[in-house]
Image (cartoon, rainbow, N blue to C red):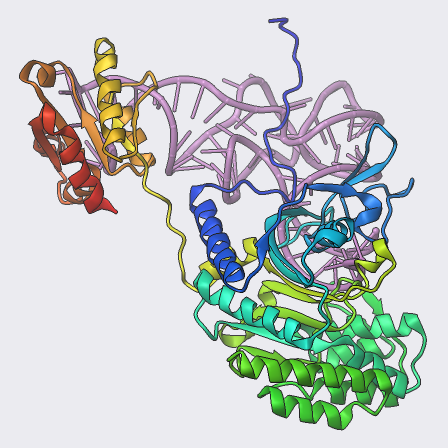
Amino acid sequence: MTGEATPRPEARAPRGFVDRRSATLRTERRILEAVSRVYEAYGFEALETGAFEYADALGKFLPDADRPNEGVFALRDDDEQWLALRYDLTAPLARYAAQNWTSLPKPFRRYAFGPVWRNEKPGPGRFRQFIQCDADTVGSDRPEADAEIIAMAVEGYAAAGLARGAVTIKINARGLLNGLLAANGVDDPGQRLASLRAVDKLDRLGARGVSDLLGAGRLDESGAYTKGAQLPARAIDAVLAFLAAGGGGRRDTLQRIAGVIGGSDEGEAGLEALSRIGGALDSLGVGETEAVFEPSVVRGLEYYTGAVFEAELTLEGGAGAAFGAIGGGGRYDDLVARFTGERTPATGFSFGVSRLAAALAAAGVAETAPRGPVVILTLDPALMSDYFAMAAELRAAGLAAEVYLGASGMRAQMKYADKRLSPAAVIVGGDEIAQGVVTLKDLDLGRDLAAQVSDNRAWREERPGQITVPRAELAAAARRIVEAAS
RNA sequence: GCCGCCUUAGCUCAGUUGGUUAGAGCGCUAGAUUGUGGAUCUAGAGGUCCUCCGUUCGAUCCGGAGAGGCGGUACCA
């Protein structure tokens, strides 16, 4: 007690970090369990790696003096090496696979889930910490490996509670667009990158916006100007024709793409890959609307080398696009080679668990808060040992129970039980002890009955939803109320 | 990073043409009600009016800078 006016810290979570309570946690756990079961059914084994990796293991990015935390949360270890919180689960897998390659079964198939961190500006649906759930196959370049990953994603969304048809997996091959640009004489890496980024915005900006971004540039509604890829008109037309090839069934889309791809080696290779993935999807029983070929899918992560996948919520009126991707993945054949020098083909998919939870809410699958424990009110401090004995009895009978440990009066204790969503309160004071009975209040029933009473005296005298039973029947009576409440 | 809007109680917001003790609703704590959640009434707690600098006798209010929030855009290895 110095009496000094010490500045008080502001009680607030850092931006981009959210606190999640039981209702949300429950939904997320259910998703993780459902998706994990699907992965395990396909033969993938669980793997957990630490939250930190050495920064150079995460990617080509390295913290530098000017912007030591650009994109990742990084810190310097006491041996001067840079550590960084993982920004996804794929880079740690590549590190793990490279580190243990000689002893692993090959191909190596694992799934993993946990939080990842990105040091970026948060936005609607974008956080700086969020949960991913990944499955990857390392060491197979078969298109069937990609198809299987896609099939699992489709099954995973269904298992998580989204109706079939509520999610579409969009599939593309980066070689298609690269080949198309090459065939049109666009070789400059900067122009190619800008073109990829422009194409990625098709669902948000439409063909007109993409066209502007491929050409001179685009002025957005906030007044900011984005410089375009400066492609010649002929190339822009070719890209737009390519984008227009999307839609409809997989076989039809492939035929339209083949007609506009323009005959480069890279484009043909991409077409071949998609064709074989399509064949495998057919034999895996993945429906034509559950997984489609979509020329505008790009994916941001630079390590993808072949096929890329993106999961989108298909809500009425195209609201799914505004929601953002709820999962994504693709083939990354060079990621393990960064460590070993040997090309090691790999493919995988990542569920955005937090976004998926939000998607479920948007799709009308409401999250419900779990019921609280039976609350034993403490009416008389002299009876504390009786209260704890009752709590132990209820727990032994398989019911969640707690003794109220605050200092407030009965009214506040009832409010507490209410706020905890307790199914029942145990009310025992001197009267009950003297008569060898316990009083239980069914809080759901009491709430319903109370809604019909307007007069305060009647409300107090009726004590709606209460029963009194012999002390020995406490657990049985409580169980009846709890079971009726769930 | 760039553009726009915003910042007064836990929340949603009034208000002060620059002047003594800054308000409401909701929420919270408690009382009316021997031992009962709701309703009603009453009382109470809770504020660096985002921060700093400037102008002024005096700034929550005016000017400047900064921070934070929201949205758009860019980036997302």
